[in-house]
Length: 91
Image 1: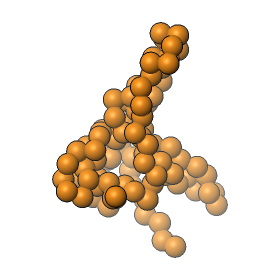
Image 2: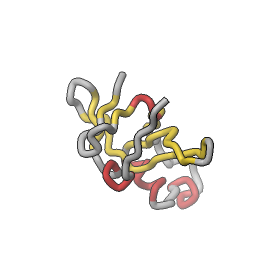
Image 3: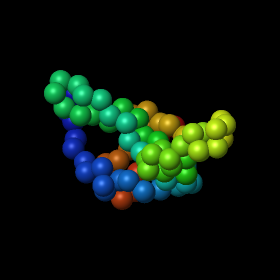
C-alpha cells in the first residue's frame, strides 16, 4: 500500500464537490489516528458545524441544549485530495 503526504493547510477551508461538481460542504476538520508510527487521516468533517468544532466552540455547551447541529462526516476514502485545491467527494 502506498501513502501520500499532503499539507492539511492546503485542504482546510476548501469546498469539497461531488463528482458532478456540486458543492458538498467546506472542509473544516480532519480526524486522524496513529498507525505504524505515522498519523493518517481517517475522517473529514464538512460544514459550518465542523468549523465550530474546529475552533472548539460547542453550541451544546454554550446553550445547554442539543443545538450543535449536524457535522457532515466523510471517511478518508470518500474524499479525493490528490488536487488539494479542488477536493472531490466520491460517492
